[in-house]
Length: 238
Image (cartoon, rainbow, N blue to C red; front, side, top):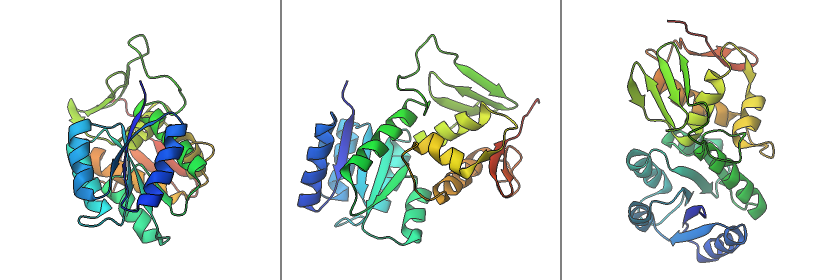
């Protein structure tokens, strides 16, 4: 089945150019030119991925992202922005985007980012195929259980809503307990070898994960910082 992408972009030439290039990559493209219409189409059509412009007439891309994350936590979101300031990228990530690209962008690179996100939607960033019922399903560590087949993460039996990127990161960490992973290693493993973006995207996602899984995010007991290196998952036997 073709991956369905909702492209929310108010500038018609950019929207058409992006649409044509993504269709040439084999994706099915839905279009919206405002945030309000983007939300309506997402609710009606349930796309796999949303490519979302930040600067939209009416409600902003930030607001669209917040709405989609609340209603469709497992959808993939890539934000497009004409701004190069770091604060705009960070705010987009804090709102729950899985990735971002700064305009003008290379359409081939956008396609690579989309394919990387598809792998995260399938849970394993290293696999081209989705998990099947014959795959090892459960990873358990302390109070946590990751059901790889259902793509659900639990703490003490309670489901924790994670974005596709957060879920892929949790899987990477929990399957390598005690191993220190550098920010660069995490970036390439999760966002792809061809992604040469800033490692700040790793830090923001770690912060979001901690806010969801830690009893005290300011003093993380599970997802630890390894100063000067990156992060590691602490092995939990309880």
